Image 1 (cartoon, rainbow over the protein chains, first blue to last red):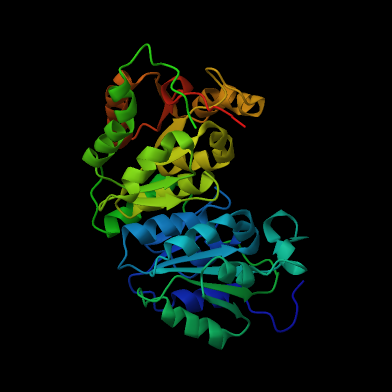
Image 2 (image 1 turned 120 degrees about the vertical axis):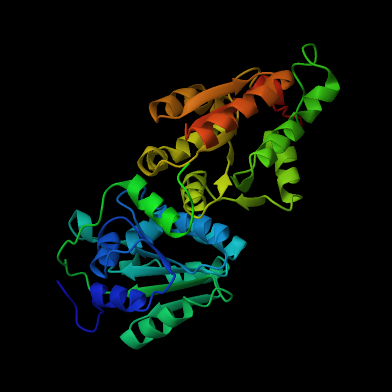
Length: 196
Length: 184
């Protein structure tokens, strides 16, 4: 069930990663991880298939370890709601190279489309701003997505947060590797780290 | 306020120095990110971390954030250690599944409540299951019960966590820390 005037999740993620350069992209479990796969498998893609609520914190750990590297977390409203406290943790650390994008379809699309808290009450942009992330945007157009995608490469002006309203249509599942050790070691290898 | 309960077993100076022993070991293993939910038993170590030029103390809102943070830190080339108290271990359970899946070095130092002279019954259920929760989740458990054994236990824990990627929790017993005293 797709509503008019809402953005298509694949177009949004494709625009975010179109000119990714050295970006490390972390996809929250569920549809978001499939979206970053659909935009093209990449050695710097971190695919999550579990650990719900953990994507923003994986992004924080990576961003603090690699302060010159743009780190982009792309996740869903359900995953962000479960890890909402991490916005306070990130707001306190203020990693200037971390960007978080929530693909907000206002529902739990993977489990039958049950409505989420963002459908009627929770305002994640307000939460992020109140947690100390002043650059927190509500996005509803592709022009805004493209403008945000450019800012991701500025590793001195974050952290930044964007909540993108997308339609809740279920799209084709494009599945990445499920081998977590491979995924992590591929990123580490690309960053120049040797195996233990 | 903490009363030391093990004064008969250990000299006062060594009892107060064990957080410094932990700090020195973490420094030697090049630990860089130190996520924590505060506990009185960790207060001196947290102070040392906050005063360090190489370690970054990262206050969390809930302990599971730290499990995920350490995965990101390792992916970016840094080691970390998670500081929490026993009640926080329960908050971590699902996130602990990241450790075998992503296979990153995991070391946590847990100050124990709910044992050895506990006053507050509300601490007892989670304190009693802390070790079992870790073991069921694939995390090896080591314990330090007095100040004298802290250096060797920390050395072993850090070595197996960082060198052998063996997920490890060190339980710092309430006997070591001293039972919390509630006074009016």
